[in-house]
Image (cartoon, rainbow, N blue to C red):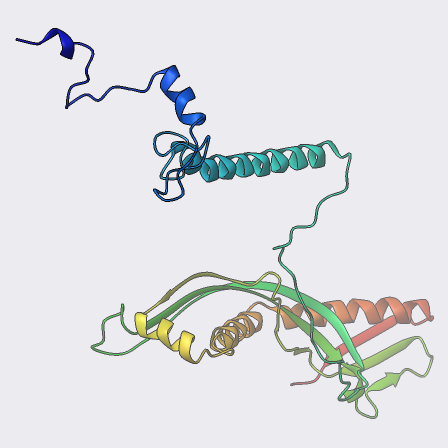
Length: 270
């Protein structure tokens, strides 16, 4: 049975909360320096104290959230203003930059040419070149390049090689006979703007070698092979025959305008 005098007493498991009268009595109490009691108005424990209060813990987190929100809002506003065109474009601090440190161009030689370019051919070749080792797996040591090469070859007649007596004029000055050297093919000019690597496969050791000691001239073999293929195709394309015909027509038109009625153009053996 519970005694009547213990009705308003707190139990051991559930201590009583201080009432308003108790708080006012604590705030008006004078601290005892000898006992180390807290000063007036400073609570010894509970919410709002310096020992782990939720307000002091949530303060930095709440401040960080405010800063992040303000930064996101500022970015959105700047992007919106830039999109409307009110302000000039903002420069990207991480934009890609290109620096040209090339040296001045050096003139090495000048040659006088007496060529008449009579025909020109554009060619394209697909080079499939693979370099590997026997009995070595491709995933370890292998290099295969699929290269699309575009090049141009000229067919010309070199007028500087016209021999003495190659131009014979008739006595009545109505006809002329000209012997020209046979047309030649110029060097293949690989167009790097139209040439490109379509696909490339490299083994693990090849990639590792590029990281340790890369070869800047690694593609030269592919370029030379493409040029050789284009040159061979130009020889079989009838480009020199087209150059012969165009040169003959050019000279006939020129000499007919000078009063010659008959113009004969022949070519010497190359």
